[in-house]
Structures are given as C-alpha cells and as structure tokens.
Length: 130
Image (cartoon, rainbow, N blue to C red):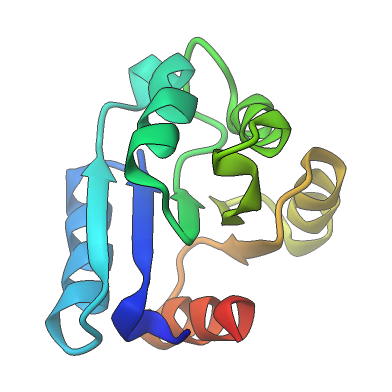
C-alpha cells in the first residue's frame, strides 16, 4: 500500500508534535491524516476510528490520555470490528524495554520512543503497511 495511499489517525501528543507528524506524513508522502489533539477525550477514539477507517493509528500520548490510558484505548481499538484491523503504533518517553512490553501487552503493532525523528516515523509506517 505505501504511505501515499494510506489513511492515518493521529491521537494526542500536543499540538506541536502532532502538527510535525502531519506535515511529515502529508507534505512529501501524500498520506491523508486525521489529527485528534484532544487527548482528554480518549473514550471517543474508537468511534472516530470507526468513521475514518484508518490504515494506521498513531497514539502519541499514551501516558497522558484520559479518561482512558493509551493502552486501554489500544485494547478497545483491537476489540472493535472496524478499527481493529488498523496498524497501531504507541509512542512514549518510557524506556525501550518498558515501552515494547506495554505495546505487546495491549496489542499494538509497534512502539516508538520519544523523542523520535521524522525518518523513524516514516520507516515504521512503511514497514507496517508493507
């Protein structure tokens, strides 16, 4: 599929980080990105994913989402018939070992440690989309 034809749902992470991700994905790579900054309404992510039908979901603020934590949101996405097929990437400033364990436990496809470079983001998405 590649990034050019993909639909990417980006959740949380603060405006600056989210805008950087959107610019990286849309500018030269042609992805269609839906950005949801409001990480304080994590209980809405599944319904948004159902409507948008993303190929990839980026959970940028797994430790700062409310009322559900990022791992809980990931579990709910996986349990949903429509959203569950999307590739999910968790982002956190947790150490690599802890972050990988959390990603595996909640059903995420990948983990990226913050801070991260644009190349890492693109590489991971391309790898997941095959």
